[in-house]
Image (cartoon, rainbow over all chains, first blue to last red):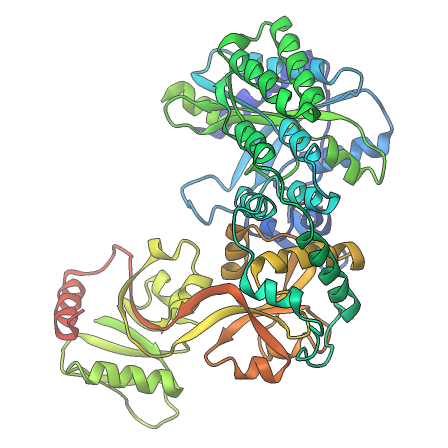
Length: 357
Length: 229
């Protein structure tokens, strides 16, 4: 694919987003590493290029536009607002050297708390318009359902916080769920530790920044947790039922109404799901055949926390467009202020490829 | 010539010489002890290149040597998608060492990765920074912790005397190579259960570049037959 062709395609997509009311914005390519590391953790080092500035310290070549665009928006105090951008992003490709390390993203971000369902539908429908008639399949999910189910568990805040923290790490989420549900035996060392009246007898001297008091606090937490009833099998079944959903949207909606009988705490999230489908339908999206997966969006970079979607090449399954809602990210970057936001990016290079392959 | 890279000093070099010697291929340093030149007897067409063990993975990937002996940990750390760049020919049965995660013995609440993850979350809340793990094996440790779903840590670079960093409060935990664990214990550290990142040993590798000459390929086959690998 030639650079000129990709540029032309990017310009065409930008025009679609601008026609939807988005203001073009630009961000710097070099971003302070600290912000990204705080958000994504050490994993981002394996995916983004890190460089060093003598004055500013560690910098990263932007792995996406979302973080700098959110920062810009939170400083502007404008609301509602919608933005579009177009430019290169940079990702290391250690595991598959054949993939592009530098590629163009054209994005569309909507900051609007008035009607989240309409904003979700707007971004999805606008992206679909921009993809025109490319041979792609849609995928959708909703992290908000899972978060609502975790928040609705009849258990301690500590357990809920631990599960919430690992929503985007399926393996650890499952380990925690099994442990809190009493489905795996407590390790012998843990039992011995909790039974020990003087656990520090052989602990040696205190070294390092993590103090004995902090260790003691965690022991107290562990004791409190051990004394607590396991999360019930019914509740775990609800979480697993949500994660296992894989159907067209209308079937998922009816399944969710059934699940909500067992866990009324997810009713509001189900209401939002339903409102979103209505809004998408009103925008001409064929929701009757729209696929939905309960676990979709859990393994991407951890900032999507509501509606999530993507469009994939029919033949090569490459992600031509991805997007979703990221309300929590705006709260983290807004230093207390939040601005409900949903957005998506399209890769013009992949879009051209799926059209020709 | 088929170039064979071998660690240039110490026990790793001696053991490698022994391993080849037992299979009828004599490797030796030529000239004075300080020179990094070598000679090979028992087969024609093989050139011995003495290198630091840490440079052998890169030289293999670059095609500057065709075969090489080094630690399996170094290949995995230094080469992304290592098995597309080099191939394992033989595990040599010496130079064994485990890359592990160790925490202070005083952390009686931390025995497993599960605990480390929970402690990291609490540490970040209290101290406003991610729990620091000192290591020189950045790639191996990061990939391991990502696959295990451990969060709220950061890696800090430590190229030597890693066991001492906790006392010096430049890190809270370490990920390092150990063969017996004694140095760890002497520094007030203990090994985490389930924290074995890689069990390393000296390994004979081949490069995977396609630009070998017919003569090099023939010598390679002959050498493999001699070594019976």
